[in-house]
Image 1 (cartoon, helix red, strand yellow):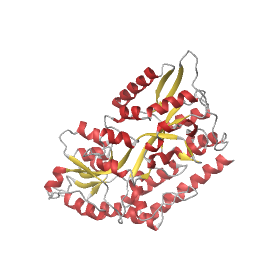
Image 2 (cartoon, one colour):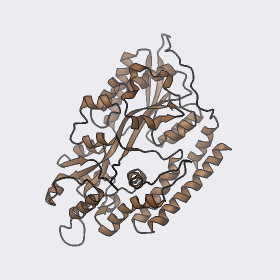
Image 3 (cartoon, rainbow, N blue to C red):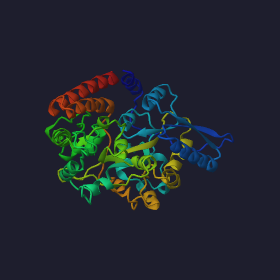
Length: 424
């Protein structure tokens, strides 16, 4: 497979964990051009970043930024360009992909560039830790989102519910009450809960009973009894209670869409759902709450993306100037002020009032105990096999234990093959 081959190619220039000397900003009169690579979620996001980069250039006349949008197969493109020594000077790196990249020594450690006035301690530690490796910082998180429970206030009122569920048992009971067959013809008009049978939405259930996603050697480990206890919650609700629905069951493309259309009364989503819901469904009355506890444990997931520096860049000092501006207090305030993303700096979140925002308070609170979305150095092998087998179990096509054991075995066979190739 292409990406597996790319792993092997990148691994050829592994030389260990070390810093290159700090370089001063060029004093040449000709402006240095820095290439910035990333993706965009919407035209509004792209417009905001363009404005931010224009502000940066106005304050740094010796540096020009060429922004390259890579929305199709982003990680494959970056890996290929790293091998060909043509990758951007600075680029986005999702926390999910960070362990592999950091292990391959293709990123510039940022420790030598960080000064006390940058206030690195201002970053949420849960986010920053996702980009630490070999006692070095390789990326600075630009924003984040946790997961929260979104619920339809009108549907709650109609069912006589006044507060959100605080435990998963309560959520399951609520879900039954919120499942409605208005015409009494056996066709459900509104399910209580929208289920997303993908690993990033199930991982916190696995963790709630002491299960693991990967073991200390980086192999899949989600087929344990503890893991199955968490996953069984979704199976029972979907198969026994029939009070939950997948997006495909109700003809929608996402959890946010089935919630916005009123096909489900509750769904677990991230901050990205808020602007989508308010713009697409302006009449929808919804609220958010922290995820219900499972096995007396508070859990949620956190997703984040960092700016990282290409180790091969010839303009390290200028690349750092860009990273430090975009993740500094001023740049981050401008970037997150519209609310489509949450700031990774605590001071910026307080300044913008997100910790007091009624629909974002639950999302901000979750970062203190959230599980970072990372599954070792070979995430595709683990995620793809889990997703394929878990949805089969959810649909009743095979027992959960069999499905997860098969997914774990197939993932680990692939990881073993990849690791052998890269070490050859």
